[in-house]
Image (tube, rainbow, N blue to C red):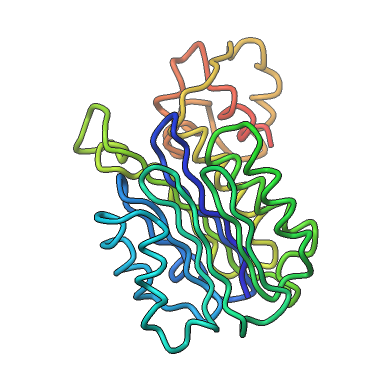
Length: 265
């Protein structure tokens, strides 16, 4: 009922999971992550203990040993599917023989992709291709989900999706900076006719809000900005900026390029 990607980025020491399904609020069940330990996706007949106990095991063991310990005493293991990436990026996966077809997984360098009730093997193949390519971890996760969806994804349809990324704690302003406690990205769409593209829309706003970006001159876009503000019912640019929490991307003379794109769209 689900397809997912579990991936590690050694450059920024981040672990991420992207998941989509014809199931309500899939992000509440499948992804389990802990900075410095690893990430686990538990699906098919999901065993949520695989998430809780699996993260505890990953603090002591590698991905292979963790998987063995999780499934060895599980009488329903042939109905489970799980993908794991450990603290060093080693990946493993398991697809039980009784998972509804098409079901399978592909393991690669620092990632694993898996799914069940899929349109076909090509869903996993395109996800693996994206995972093997270049790009920021959150972009690769989103693009993997999008490409999978374009290949048919969950053959029952669409309903929910989620992307979660954690990284080793660091940064200043520890009281208000999510990265200081290991959080990086956490977006869920729980019930939507097109959940992956909705995830993409929200992610663009997240990027514009939290990530550093190119600043452009407001004067170069005065007419377009004025027309957008008029349509939206704002008296000036500063008011729109403040309502939408983009103060850190606006100096009065310059505005973040992504923020500008959001305004004009």
